Length: 166
Image (cartoon, rainbow, N blue to C red; front, side):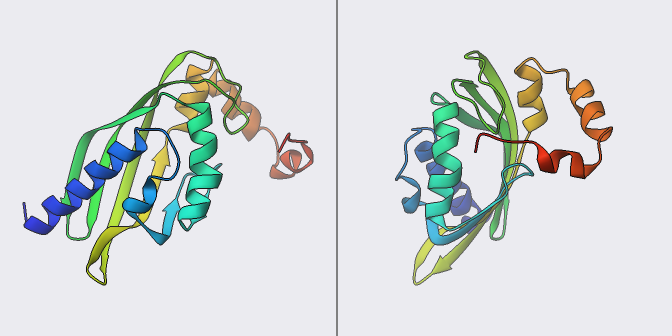
């Protein structure tokens, strides 16, 4: 493995240390201010560290306060590092409209991080993220097949009129 790839993997590993502390304000050490976090449907894209921290991480930390993420595979090539693994946690508060269970869950994810160097500083600039939200629903007690059949049986306009608490 090249020295650059090893340094990029180490940056991601260090960032995981901050993520797993489950508190806000630590990500500036690892991410550029104008970073882009491109999350799955239902969450969306976060533009900039402030939006990432306030609109994504804050509700996530509240919902999963004891979360610990651990890659089972992590590879690096050039400016990119990719990893997949599980976050083990307690589902303590509602998340994305899914009622909390106060039970342990194991959340599958996949990440692709792009690292840049600017003015001699190497940080994360972009993150393409997949989170197994259907797996969270299933662990929360939903029959995912029935959920998908219900959603698929309705036209998209059906969901436009549903009131949400947000």
